[in-house]
Image (cartoon, rainbow, N blue to C red; front, side):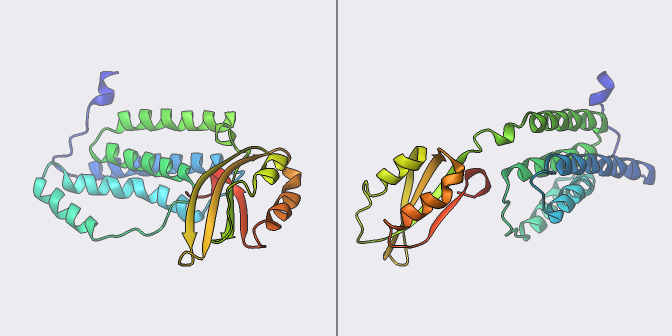
Length: 225
């Protein structure tokens, strides 16, 4: 058991050691990608995210192997990576978890902790599978985000309360912000519908009070704040 935390000697990189470390990093990355695909089989996933999860681990392992214990290499590689700017946003917060798992797997293989990395990643993936089977990601799924645009001249205090009480079990105004240089106001609500089949009637009732401006009603778990 103590051998799990022992690292492979990577002070001198030979072809065999390099292939061992990279092979383990690729194997763990494939396992992470498979769990990602399984846990997203109902909601679907972007192939680009699956590719990123698979490639991230081996790439991180290469970087860690190249750095080793050399501070000068770490600074030079860090400076090079600082030039790269990532502008894509992650739509699903769960995707970040898989990216961090792949990152951890690559680092553990890169420093030579293959046994520890395999066990740690395996336990985390098992925990992720269990939470997915239990449907924890669906808890609170009945909550929705309601956004209503109103003219700046409209007094919004209490104007939508009768409609919200009629169709919602819970409604809370989270924030108010201006749009179009202050000519419009956006009301952002967190709501729980009494009956999801009444969404059309609910939106129609709101449109009668906001001057037929834009209204959006989306699942709270699928939209960024």
